[in-house]
Amino acid sequence: MRTVIWKELSEAEQQEVLTRPAVSSKLDIVGIVTDIVTRIKKEKDQALLEFTAKLDHVADGKIRLTEEEIAEKSAQVPQELKDAIIHARANISAFHEQQKTEPVVVHTQPGITCELHTHAIDNVGLYVPGGSAPLVSTVLMLAIPARIAGCKRVIMCSPPPIANEIVYAAKLCGVDEIYTIGGAQAIAAMAYGTETVGKVDKIFGPGNAFVTEAKKQVSKDNQGASIDMPAGPSEVLVIADSKANPAFVASDLLSQAEHGPDSQVILVTENLEFSRKVEAEIEKQLAVLPRKDIAAKALASSRIIICDDISEGCRISNEYAPEHLILQVENARGLLPQLRNAGSIFIGAWTPESVGDYASGTNHTLPTYGYAKTYSSLGLADYMRRYTVQELNQDALKALSGTVIAMTDAEGLMAHQRAVTIRISQMTEGK
Image 1: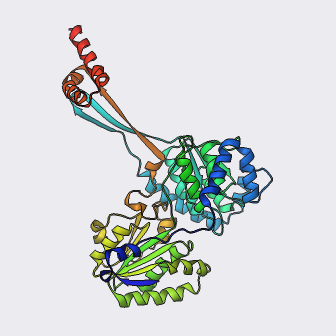
Image 2: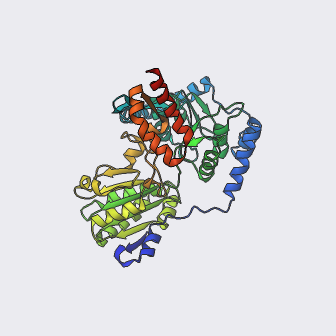
């Protein structure tokens, strides 16, 4: 990890330090995804099955799990893991249940009633990555709020061979349909629909560069589907003082570094000697990690920033806007008023980022790559849409008419004005 002294850097150098590593690839990701999305939109199942055979190496044409297959796979999950999943589901459900909202009813003036209502998005699609680590926790984070919100239909796609624990969690959390398809082809199938996969209105879930690009493309097409949020590589920023435990800090940094070589971790501290202790701990802990090669690549583009004091550290964090922000300082909760831009904040020595990833109750689907400045952590509201209602009686319309007439005059929209004045005339004639 590269160490820098913040005050010794120019403004341009400070910006460079906080710049995420570019997601590089020799492949034409945009072009490849465009071809997949375009063909599935047009050819539906024919193209979907072709890409599944070519990219997922499954050519039997079976892409939806039957109830019998779901039961069989679920039965193979060890009871200890089932108990852990059930425990995590309880905590996540408890937190998201409290996010339900009641209708808002406001009488802005006598005779005028304005209301705000919400209802669930009807059809949602969940994408759960496969690969080297079956992300059972992602199933919980995506499916639980969908069911609490009241979505009528919830489907899930995950690349083959789909892990037994992913299937078990999906069934436990009320997923209606499970498909063994992955990558950009899964996103396109959910966005446009095929003969086998019914179209959804919104797509949730993380993925690799191809999945991310596919979500971007279908969300820009009015025939496609909306998406949860822009996505980038995973990241964490830790603010620590000299009294923090170096081993704890190192473990938090490594827990994100092992996600992938394009992940980034940052330590912000006012104590240079403490940072060296953390580096020593990182080296010691890294040596025993099964994914040490992946973590080591992420550490190569990571940073240690030495600030003047913790308040400056908070300002640095706000500028970076991390996906995960960990506070390992005295009176950590006291820093909250200074912090604005973060996907999720973890307070104190006994709150590792891992608990939020799995089972504390908050959602681990978070904005990355600086999007925490404008996007929020996934919650019940993302599965809902809101709409307004208004109702006026005759007296209220008469009382408000002068304001509307003056404003429509200013904008030159006479049809808007007549929609009011014709009613006022009717009232007068009625008398």
